[in-house]
Amino acid sequence: MAALKIIARALLFSALILVTPAALLLAVVAETSRGSAAGYLALGWVATGVLAVAGWARAAVVGVVASTCGVAVLLFTVPPAEAPDGVIHSTPIPFRLSQLVPEIDQVKVGLALAPRVDRFIDPLQARRVARLVLPTYRTLGTEDRRSALAFGYDQVFGGKERTEHMYWTSTSTRTGGPALIFLHGSAGNFLAYPALLSRLDVPVVCPTSGFGLYLDRAATADTVARARRFAVETLGADPDRVFLAALSQGGQGATQVAHDDPSLRGVVLISAVVDEAAMAAWSGPDVLLLHGAMDRRISKSYAEAAVAALSTSTASVSARYWPTEDHFLLYAQPTEVVDAIRSWMAARD
Image (cartoon, rainbow, N blue to C red):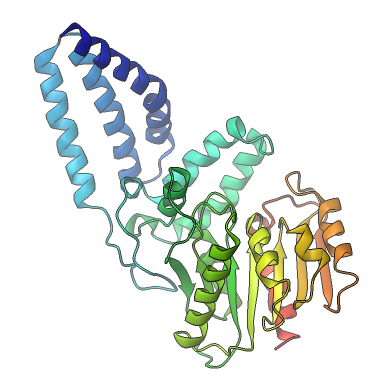
């Protein structure tokens, strides 16, 4: 019995340290009722554990019943695996506990924590990013959708990068036209990406690559090939007019896949990391590089070196730098970025 008490207290102490801060933060910053409820329920479970260890058995029983009922309600109201009708479509997303919290609230928690865990993001920048990205989420009805960020959590906790999931847009009715495949950056395939890129008015396919580390070159090649088949066979794109785009860490995967694939019509790199060996041996398609000159994570000099590495290739290389923008260029200047991509694609259409 004494051993059980010691174990219970150890578990409670761990919960107090690990769960309480995150649950409290979620309860405070959540924008949706589901997110707030999840935060308060997590706090309720911790409080119930405190009551139980303190010997308040009846109060603990009440807490268990109330918390269990609350969790049951959240589980019952998790959105379906299929995405609702709209501009942004999704293959089915399986249930994970993270689906209890809508993606907009996960993003708000992540931005609140970012200055403490990411040396490239300070509190001022985190608040700026929130002002830029949250309006997009508010138009998407994320409370009615499951989040593909669950695949990223799977990979972090031992899962694989390779998944079958993808988002796609269907704003264009043009059959046989161009299409764009977009590789997300690290932290996962955010719903904001297809939302912003839907302004292109061509089919955009956003496959999910786990957390977005792109450590498995074969998995990345398979992901791009699958997205390409989908764009052609399902969305009606011309197989000879498929473009590949990538953001941040996604550029690592994109340059590895595209450097020797001239069948792609072009590659767009947005605030992107690149595979330096692939750039030096480039025999692939034309490249458009879009970058914020104030990017602290991926410097302008790094981007310029990537452009210079392509100077010996036969590909046409175009670069545009925004002098006052940082790593969150896509969020800060979505219209200008999309217009730049559209014009560049049209010149190769």
